Amino acid sequence: MKKIDTTQIVDPTSQQPFTGKSLAFIQQANLEVIGALTKAYLGTDYSATQVYVIERCRKVGNVIANGYIFYGGEIFTFIGADTTAYANVPVIKFQQPYDSAIDPVLFSDGVNKYVHELPQFYIDDGVSGSTSYGDYDDVIFSGKNPTTYYTPAGGNFGAMGVQWTGPLHTYNVEIYIEADVSVTYITDGRLGATFTIKNLSTAGFYPAFCAVLDNTNTSVGKTRTQRMCATWRKTAIAGGTNLEPWVSTGQADQHTFGNVFMRITEF
Image (cartoon, rainbow, N blue to C red; front, top):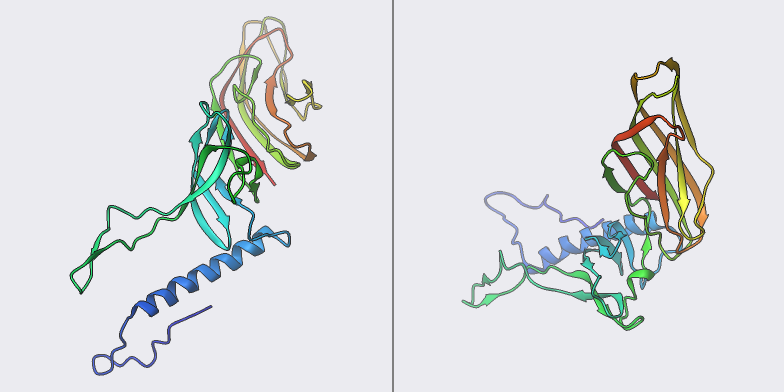
């Protein structure tokens, strides 16, 4: 990487001036290193004209979250939006405001100037394909983009309370769920619960991927609680497929789920 040679400085007899070119040199060095690392992370399919999500930016319902994206070799802030009232589709635009908390800066010539740039991409209501950066649905979610949800107790339920909206491109997903399963028995039995995933595009369920059980018999009227956890992974899910994780006991006993934690990660 680019570096400034400081070995020729001899304080206080031979001091090196720090010029605008020196500052640009340092900034360019940082950009090159960050760009090289990110491109290696994205892999051989990297394109300089494609918007890649580095962190967050996930759409839940009609709300697109803030986050960070990579475009043209640089990382940028990404400003999301509530798209509920949009007449068209969420499109990606670019703007470059200045940091009003710092600017303007008084230069040596007595002129105030704006220099602290905040380049950022943002979501706006627009016609599909109307910007050079593409629509929100065109972005590629790179690596792992976790979204965490907490859900209160309450019987059979979709663990998020709402569906998880999958991207339009083919994707791989990992879903990790933890929950405290509490059962008050109306019949003698054992504590048990299952995790499964509902495909909202087909209204069908994937096979249950966890059945954590406490095989100790429990008498009528007694309550047992057990922490359970499981991970579900599936590759090559069709684009546009929305998922809803479910937890259930499949028993007639009175049961609740508490302290639910779920993490969804694309990989």
